[in-house]
Image (cartoon, rainbow, N blue to C red; front, side):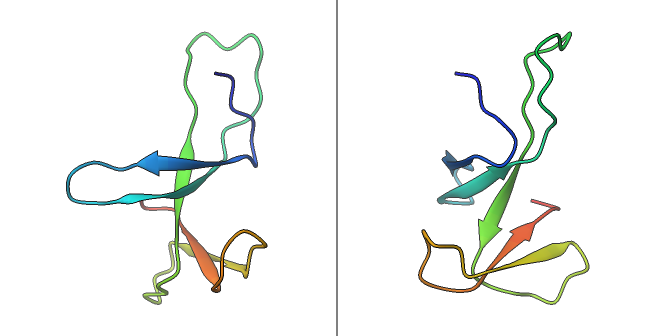
Length: 71
């Protein structure tokens, strides 16, 4: 698997959270010293946090959404 920045994946965030879409935000680096990708979970609930970035209504979701950068 070789995820690219901007790609959306369904991610299981563990027992407390749930399966939700997440967007890849790490840079594309074919010579990276580590196999690491950074993803930010998406949410449809705006909590008014400074750490949520509005995405509007993505084509693949039925509501306005936010990227929860602290997630």
